[in-house]
Length: 324
Image (cartoon, rainbow, N blue to C red; front, side, top):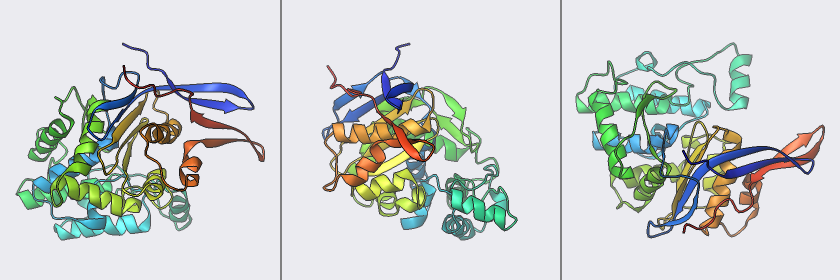
């Protein structure tokens, strides 16, 4: 296999102590590769970057959600109280409850919420698991379509067959492998380039289509797709019209209103490398915002030594050469 280039360097006290390799691609407004690093044509597990595509499949199958709740269904929430309330609404609308969820129990991703849950005697739960919005929507889709809720995570269930078909349609690829995601749902391997094409299709779809409904809900309610303090929310706040979704193991995907799009996969799965690379890729595509400070804050992650800032996690120089 091709060895992917270094996309991110971890510099401490003027010394590069760690490096993260990966693959990335940026598409121009016409859908052609404008920047490329490594081998973005190789299949990967996009992890939760698949969620917007899963949400499209659910809408096509009869799910009736919009706005905040649709953003929640397409997101990886932080387990904050308003996220849990949203999951409860989705389940209640389908005549179901928390006992019907088949995602694992988990502490909230949001540190402040996690501390509050622990302080009040709580613990891990299915409702606070970051994929519970998707799972609640999957169950609601089964009810709407007349499919059994039992076994809704089986890869041969009608819901998952519908999801696979949408993933293949939007990415323009045949699924290269089928796995099991951390939440227990089927996971479909496609290329980094395919993920970028899928996100581009979401933002360019006609108003009112399932694809556009997902994109519009996520962009209008980024705190519901991630959380109050998450980097995805900050990115979408910084660049109006930007759609961003991360995935575990160092995946990020995005698309802009005019069709420019991109995706990143960090080889070693380091989540700390994801956002600096994404900001660099956005800028390589000419996507920025009038006041650069917000993106500047996300472009590098400071490293501390004692009480001082002594370095940063930052994109490697010349990480994104134009394709030849």
